[in-house]
Length: 241
Image (cartoon, rainbow, N blue to C red):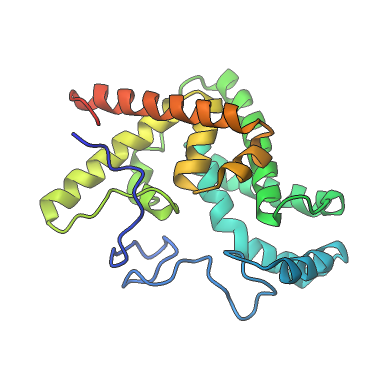
């Protein structure tokens, strides 16, 4: 059996109403909004710099635009890492509080979005350490939440193309298994897997977020993918390619 968890979504795929896509599989949430000061998907340097200057000037509207642009992306990352919706929601608020407090320290040596990811990951890892001491092994919301927040909502992960209803049901079942197995990975391996294969960050961005050299990132990602395949295969009782 082939594990189709690292393919990109098909253009015509439908998505749930709250997934950030329209009902016909149209534009994702993070497209350019005329009301926003910059395009968070592919901002050019000049436009992003102007937006950062507004943030540094404590422009309240700019901060609101920042939250609007990144809140779902940050929440998705935190949910994949923490496995609990309530924790992810609380942590997302904390991320933006820290962004607002620390914006004066942003040096511009990375993309703004990468810097926000770095804050989110660091806060998330601290929270995971705390939770692991209090509730070892608890990931109770991850499986039921699969239907509300599918992997295909991420940039780089989907079930693969399915057209028949029986294939779709099978795909959702596999997706829940994959999510549960991701939640069981050690934090360091889960981090690079989610950032690369769900959020579709480049290796350069991964290095900036994690603070690791590229060789370490690639090695850790390779091991994480191998562990994920092995875990999914064990749960399904068959070999995963």
